[in-house]
Amino acid sequence: MTNDPRDRASDTPRDAQSGGGTRKAIYAAGGGLALIALATAAVQLDVVPRWLIGAGSSIEETAAATTPDDQFTPPARDAIPDSPFGDAVRRGEAIFTNTATNAGDHVGNGLSCSNCHLDGGRHPLSAPMWAAWVTYPKYRAKNDQINTMEDRVMGCFTYSMNAQYSPAGGPPPHGDDIYRDLESYFFWLASKAPTNVSLDGIGFGKVPKPEGGYDLARGADVFAANCAVCHGEDGQGQRDINGDYTFPPLWGPDSYNWGAGMSRIDTAAAFIKNNMPLSQPGSLTDQEAWDVAAYLDSHERPRDPRQTGTIEENRLANHDGDEILYGQVVNGVLLGQGTGPSPARAATMATPSAAEPQN
Ligand code: HEC
Ligand code: HEC
Image 1 (cartoon, helix red, strand yellow):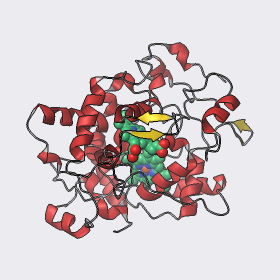
Image 2 (tube, rainbow, N blue to C red):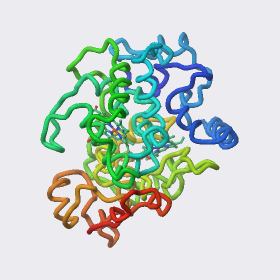
Image 3 (tube, protein in one colour):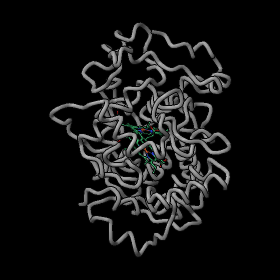
Image 4 (tube, rainbow, N blue to C red):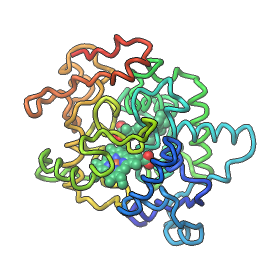
């Protein structure tokens, strides 16, 4: 198989009308003008893959040429059946690609599921949902129990989507229709996949830690050269004229919180190496991926919702041995104190007292 995720980005070719999940999310996020500007800039910079802007892909051109025999390919989007089940699949896809609009009561930051699980959860090595689906239920050390898919998704709402600062103040409760719809979508993506196996392309991959570790100053340079054009010099992403994110924030109050998998440097390095910069995954060296991952994760973000006592107590209980800067002093500042919600978000929260960072 090829190691170049770019080759696989077009495994699920779309025409310009139907649109990829990600592109749809970005397009849905804003008005036409901003999007035309975005697409134009992206094409000029040659920084966005073809599946994102829908430029000139066709089934003949891409599928045969780039799909290795052993790479599972989820069904094409237009194969979603016209039935009550198909309706649930469509609702699940909509929640996944535009989470704030379709499950907004439980979203406490500026992200959608598909910002980290690219191409609507189809993209290999961005923890694709078809590969995940066939491995649950399974044991997770993080909460020391057998996790159903519902438990696992609840975890991503709690940490990656920072549900503590959402209007409801937490993830969807067990049994919520949001899980029913998301699981219908994942189940359908995994159509005809074998079960209880680790499919090629699962997870984010692994990038070994460089012998000399990582360096935050070098990471800042990697960031300025390769990431700031889309995510902003300050890492806060970019919004359209409606205030919706066209490029997601990497740290600060609208990003994932300190309990999220992405706040661990090894996980972020693997995601970045295999998925970023968006148009050129695999272009960073392992060293650059670690340096820039550490740089991202050396900035404050919303608090770890599990913290009840001190940061140090929570570090020992939940982060001990992790590749994470939580609870460490960086440039004279103790990390993990939490940003609290942005003022706009605080105004939508049911219990604003939860906004107080507890150190
Ligand atoms: C900030 C990035 C981010 C966002 C946003 C995000 N996730 Fe995740 N997700 C991750 C990471 C990182 C992992 C792997 C976690 C780990 O290693 O602990 C993961 C893992 C998963 C898994 C398990 C994958 C596997 O192979 O076992 C599922 C399922 C999942 N996420 C679903 C979702 C859903 C549904 C949403 C939206 C409600 C979502 N995620 C939002 C980063 C994210
Ligand atoms: C061409 C624009 C572009 C460039 C350059 C780029 N990104 Fe991204 N990045 C995106 C987009 C768009 C997403 C959301 C993906 C989606 O929804 O399909 C994203 C998602 C992410 C995410 C997960 C979501 C979040 O907000 O946490 C991380 C982390 C990330 N990028 C890090 C980086 C890093 C590090 C670099 C530089 C090495 C980089 N990106 C370069 C466009 C870009």
